[in-house]
Length: 92
Image: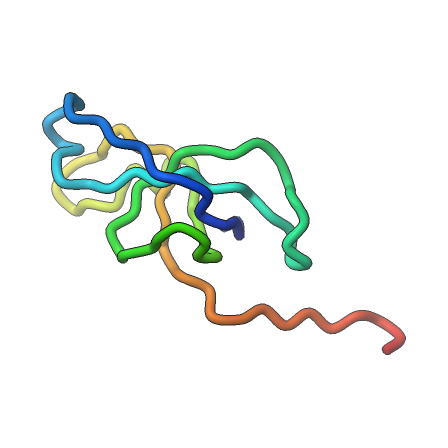
């Protein structure tokens, strides 16, 4: 899993039939301290995330199995909206 923040939306009126009804969001990957951790990517959202939300994302083959019926052409799936992150630093 990876943390990130939603920084935008993608609208696609023409897409694979299996993707109809799914929302696509642009996610900026981040470290626990919210610093950037790479290049933004597109993730499918079915849980209602929106612009500015910090989210948990699963990537790769795990994302393509979001449906029990068949494997979908997806490589990133938002699986949670983060409420808070607590990181304990050594020596403090």
